[in-house]
Length: 293
Image 1 (cartoon, rainbow, N blue to C red):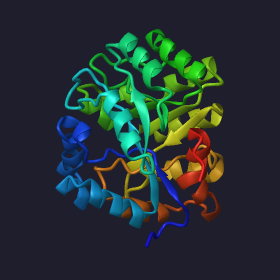
Image 2 (cartoon, one colour):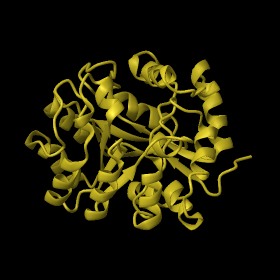
Image 3 (cartoon, rainbow, N blue to C red):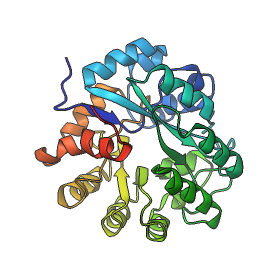
């Protein structure tokens, strides 16, 4: 039986399907945190079992997992997943997965073509980019990214911009590329664009919540950085949501980094105001991604 208080949309979940497990994406997510943290990982992840994952989702109350696309031109150990395979995965499991299409920073034209090709496919809900951890890192307001933001507006899709110090480091860069300051400039240039900051620019948590406060089109998605007991900076995301971001904070686990049940339990004990928890677990993401039921 699920122990959460409402259905959950997990904004960052990489399932054990061939698109992920045959490359470096799943393996990197499985192993890098265990070098410095006592994350035990999920049974489904160690066994690479989709059936067990679905059981774990049910027990945790997670109705949908968002397959956040990744295409990183081989930077560091990040790897990538073909958009075609994301489209196939969400089509094969429409009651479990939602998908975001990735755009490679070193092949933006190709990525834009794939977005046009696949954007109307069932359960495709947005665009995913990782400008601070690509082969050649760039700020979020780099002019080369303008066509991405413009096509997102044209197709009425939110853009997930993944930023974290750890992600930048895995891409071979210093953590300054995870600063969210350039997000503010993008949000002001494109006020109708919905921007999700995946990993919530950790460890620049203070700056992140201030940028979101200043920009009503910015959503904060800390995933494991606000669903892990004892995580540094987590209290900043909680305070931000409790004070003024209750309608623009999103839940995520970053599975397979963490076990789903552990993530939900840790999240519920973080100190959120009880009345805003359903917003963070379900309502905010459902509204943003146009999910019903």
